[in-house]
View 1: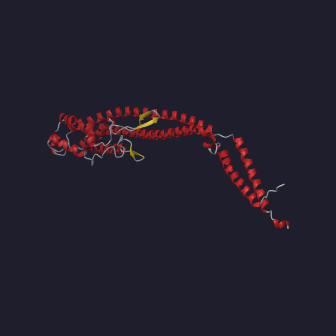
View 2: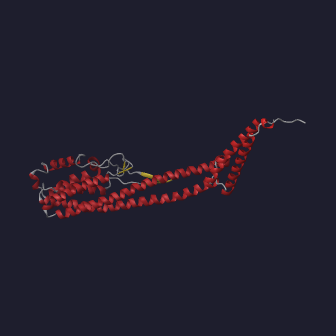
View 3: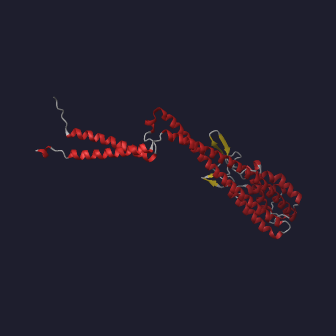
Length: 346
């Protein structure tokens, strides 16, 4: 009969390897108990792991679209609020204009109201979100509207007046301009300066093309409005007429014609901004509904992916307890083996 030799060193090595395996399994078991998922999904699923990866990729893509939708909704909400404020500003301007007609004593008040309205509207149309000008269209990297005083529009308007009448509007001769003459000047010379090419040349850096957002996998939607909308042009034009021509340089007949023109522009502004708000409301609803559909898809796909790697909580807890018991036993055996010494038996 042959007797195999067994040393304490070989026993320690075996226990050490066993302990290492148990500790690794313990980490995996603790992770499975805490998350309810397999610690190594790819090892567990094998070739089926490709399906799970595809599901999680779709979830990630849908979440990205959800984030884009959230940003688009924030932009539209700010745009709606800004449009309401502009409408309120023009209504206040309307009150001043109505008071001015037939009452020269309020000219300075109305002129100041026009300047304040122009400054406020310009500031609102240059509103930013995350560093982007929300009314700039696709050109969102720079202010949508230039300052009237310093951006060249005022100089262009003063030059147009002098070219048309032969003298500046501050000249005493301006008192002789009648209603028909000033109306023709506004209709033929000034109107084109605040619409179309003239608007872009004198004031606006915005583009007519607006930002579009992919609100679903196969669906896109406009997600902004441009400062080039006619309602904004009318609001600015009304403020310019009020601030530039009702300061007393012109005669009463011409000022009355200008005030009436500005009042008409305010009415036009209200109607156009109401339509624009309805348009933005439809955009927001469309994006919101798309996000709701995406949320349902995300929940379904997430549930499918989780189900593929889910663990039985009872089984996972039992396995964890078993591993803890085995490790404790291993520690006990190791401690006893460390006490083995030939010197104790001599």
